[in-house]
Length: 346
Ligand SMILES: NC(=O)c1ccc[n+]([C@@H]2O[C@H](COP(=O)([O-])OP(=O)(O)OC[C@H]3O[C@@H](n4cnc5c(N)ncnc54)[C@H](O)[C@@H]3O)[C@@H](O)[C@H]2O)c1
Ligand SMILES: O=C(O)C(=O)C[C@@H](O)[C@H](O)[C@H](O)COP(=O)(O)O
Ligand SMILES: [Zn+2]
Image (cartoon, protein in one colour):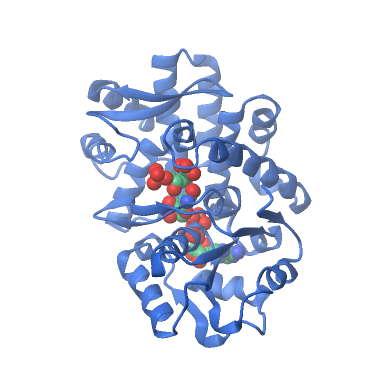
């Protein structure tokens, strides 16, 4: 974890990280939201105004057009192979900036400064980069580790409660994967009531859970599939919401996905049904009610595109209990259709 820096002095740490780069080789990427709320906090003289790249906010901008725009500016400004791209923003910026950097001149460095809870605990760490394509989440992407990740909780002050909740879903996911005290601690939190000083420790713990898995399997050939818990169903729901222009955050979709995939875990892995009821009630209490946008059959069709699928069918990560996961579980269409019913039951 030595390339992940937890600090309350993001500007100072960034200044040091850029020490060996000349201004012509420093580029910074934000979206319209992080440009407004976050860029002023790292306003370094060394970063030239003309090397600042701003893309639109929202998942529709996690697109080939945004990547082309980033590449065009890098190219027009003569970015060299030894340039660095600083990605400051939520998961959209760190994913797409990481992707653009990993291909430009076959790869320039990037530094992530995650500014949402979700990107601090999950997206900025671990080297999955990408963009949406053909109606599918992260359909195109690379594995490419950032040079550094600089995490400062000061950024979280300007996030809406809905955005905090979105990031909290990935923390719940990490807690389910880790089990033990971390599971108990995260499940006892009411996100709106937690004070800033407590977030710091909780974020660090959550990152540790993710990082241990990434280190063991950086390219998702095996156990990294665990980090995709909740996403087989979650990504299908999120893809539909993007297509329909419905405001639904990544974490909301993952929370709904976890409800379904925990149910499948009770059916196929012997996950305790009493505990399932408790967790499911907790999730339903904090996230907005699920609004069906398409027939379940359409969600199933989207799941057939999941990146974990290596043979016919849909591949799930399931849980035996908190802290004990099982990868590569292919579930039948019937099993999936039955499990999806939990979304419409209260
Ligand atoms: N690579 C990975 O491992 C990984 C992991 C999880 C999620 N993701 C991806 O991350 C994306 C979601 O990321 P997200 O939840 O951060 O959403 P996001 O990046 O879209 O940011 C949400 C909104 O918050 C704004 N914003 C950012 N920082 C802010 C701040 N400090 N104050 C106020 N507003 C701020 C943004 O402009 C945006 O409007 C999805 O595309 C998802 O697929 C990737
Ligand atoms: O780091 C991982 O591995 C994850 O799966 C983390 C997820 O939270 C994240 O949403 C990721 O982008 C999903 O990846 P994908 O391979 O399903 O697109
Ligand atoms: Zn995710």
